[in-house]
Image (cartoon, helix red, strand yellow):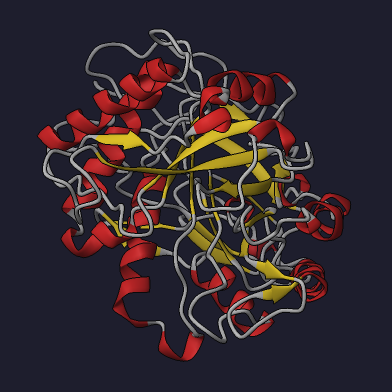
Length: 423
């Protein structure tokens, strides 16, 4: 993902122009849209999708223009679904057909095998979540298959709908569950709730509400899952003077700046869409506000910390309850305790063994008081298959020096009011 994403939806409605004619200020361009291969029939019948391709000179030059945009640093994504083009992916057969159709699409756009002609997909498929959780399960599976095939640089974004905060409804709750599932399974890199359509959604109050809403933990597959703030941006649609359903460019700037200043740290924004912003004013008026703000990813809420309680790299001993069928004696293999290294050094875990890894960490000045943070071990950034327990830490005001509050065991799962902890 770009550090400060500035995205444009490139739709096929007039007025239209070639991809290469848009400013490079847009570091992501979403091609709208892929829809069921058997036509724009709600959900489709197989799971396969095709990409709508413009006619005339624009369509003829599309492959070359995509290559040019990518060469100059812009990410090109295919937006799946939206505007009556939703595709249902509630079974493995449909998911497999979807994956194959993306591979076919890649070949049609100039790719070959695992060589990508574009950079990922935009999950714009919310009309299909009535079948949740099957839809989320098989969308996640499809995403994992694509990332396994094309590599971890294959991107996933999403523009969930929003409603006025006073009338959020069950649909938004389903959207949040769907996105939390995709995040948990490693197939979501960025989401931007869209603050336009219906009327009166284009307000700072609604933007604040939904940036908090999508950052709230939900239970997915029995595991508490929270999408971090540095995954969540803002979906704008702007008009020169603003309407009851659109932002003025000035109001969009004010809203974004305010969301930054009040601590919500949005991760960039997108612009819907080229046919409504014919003068590219989002790129000239709004994008500088995004680029000038400190990227949320640069705010480090926790860092490694030195400890007098152990030597860096020391071996761990069994502290936690052994997994089912294991014993802390015969089946435990020592890991390491770390205060200077993350990721941890490689560990060759013996067959049938289990281990424990520990890091000593501290909250930094960028951590937010009264905010609950969750921690998990990954495989060099990739999510593991299963998380049965999620350690949580609610940051509080550091107490006075009171030895009774100093954590003595790595088995602590949740604690408030302390400034550092070994986990």
